[in-house]
Image 1 (cartoon, rainbow, N blue to C red):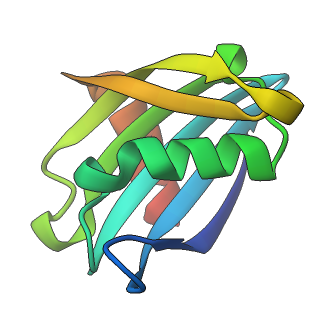
Image 2 (image 1 turned 180 degrees about the vertical axis):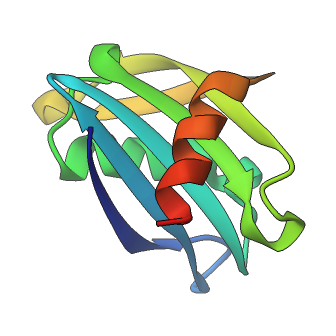
Length: 118
């Protein structure tokens, strides 16, 4: 499984810019995308719809083949949850994530933890 990681900046409240780490794991046409909160402003929980929308559109991903997760570096990755969104496609083929639902995910948590310990 191929992995790429990068710092993602997003605008939160007003003109403030916040950030989180994004890790994209590629397996064929599937993408497992982890939002890692690094205590860089607004939490990934509160910004998850915005971050998911930005990542899908920026990298031209098909959300039907994407799985999203969130975790918190500052809490030693104790929580690791999958986030399911309702996706709406709008003008100019722009996807928007909404109605997030969180659930525990132990399986991909193990994949993620192994990848950061390398």
